[in-house]
Image (tube, rainbow, N blue to C red; front, side):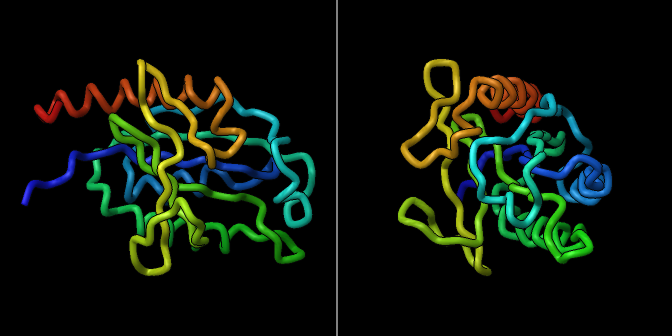
Length: 176
């Protein structure tokens, strides 16, 4: 059986300013390698979903890592990020950081979730995967269920830049 093409890990963070982002990135580097690319810090105002738990002054940032990994790492990656979220609670027991891990391939962006929905596929150990963006016509394009912040041009620019890093790494392994 042919092995799947390797991918890069990325994570989308929504956090309270002052959250221990560096600690999260350090822990993720054990699985995903060093940070290869980070987005600008953006105000997160697309939904009030996190407001009750985390407050209103939230920011969004994406990070792509440099280690080529097998896509099968997604399950363990999501369990690791859930553990990191539990380690980053405020004095009231709410999260200070939301960590959305995902995989970047040459053709799509896949997010991991613990919640099922019609467009998600069960991967095992309580984890689901969803294709969030697809690469077509030299850019990433949203799907009907794509979150609003992943529809933004800033997200597409980030993921296109990360895809170039992936392309170079795969060339180095003669996989493209």
